[in-house]
Length: 79
Image 1: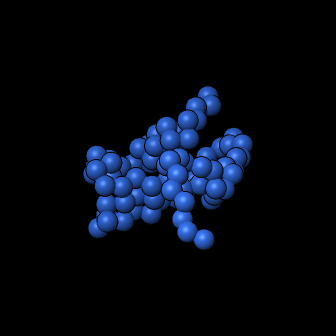
Image 2 (image 1 turned 30 degrees about the horizontal axis):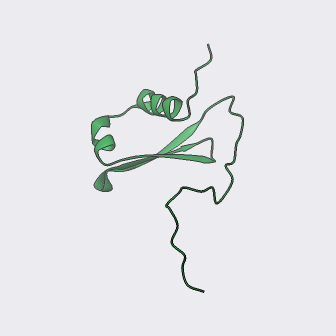
């Protein structure tokens, strides 16, 4: 069968997985040569900061990583 052209559209190929998050832990893998910081959150989620965003981090700390996680996952730190 030949390909059929269609109007481009983003479709869900694999349904999203969800999980409830009550606490956050992380591990980081810093690849400075490729300008990439990979943050493994709770052992199951990955956040990657690379390129110009990596350069903008400068000397990052645990506080920086915490803010990246809270922002990307849209979480609010409990008091």
